[in-house]
Image 1: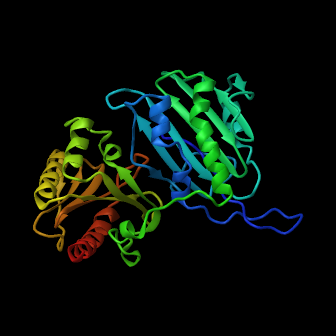
Image 2: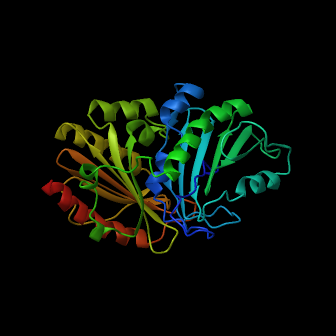
Image 3: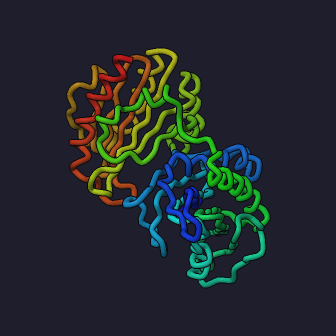
Length: 348
């Protein structure tokens, strides 16, 4: 599936009379907080829908052509494990204080009839069904202030009213965001477990706490249910996650921390990660990451460094999310970050 989810735009700043205010930078975490809540997805789409790990895609990483350059972008997928259907949400922040007028342009580019009447969410809204898709697709796009929201359902045909039930809570979140009243971000306890700013391998794009289901949702062997079950039984239910962008503007470093109730559970999870990346991989070396660690290049798709630190397991991956081969700078970035993060976790 193409990744093009729900779009959210910026925050109002104070401005002089008669002049448009410049929008201050909008954090990726704020955009994520304004998206569709998982309970809403379960209520509207069904209890068997799971989130995936959020995608922080702020430019220059974001590549979708738009008439205006966004300030920040965050995407969130929801999927039904084992099914070919999904809900894309993309949150994009632009400068300015008024509606960017992007939704009508996206709809017109598909060259199909559009519905600009319902569902009535946002200050402007468009609903349409693309005509050139091999599988069913329905799209709702709406704007409020410098915020555009796109909700796309793939693999199923939804009515405008049903999509509106997903869009309405997001519209409320956008209002709260623009008013400076939307809580977002993670707490200091979580931040203290992630790499220090001085150890960052590149620009930090975003940090989140994700449920076990999000990390497991794409699994095939074992099943997503089995994988999430192992995490939960070990006590790893809320996973600190962060994404960095390397200086080339193409490759990212994604890191996830799995915290367990016991060292036995941590070692068992490390063994699971070991098996998952062992096929068609090239073993590499990385010093300073403890007695239980692995470092591999997997099928020219990504580099991965995993290690155990007490009751925790760290997973660090470097790759190009839009399909290119990962840069060789990935190996250097992981060799530098891994030992520093291991030392930090070992002291915790």
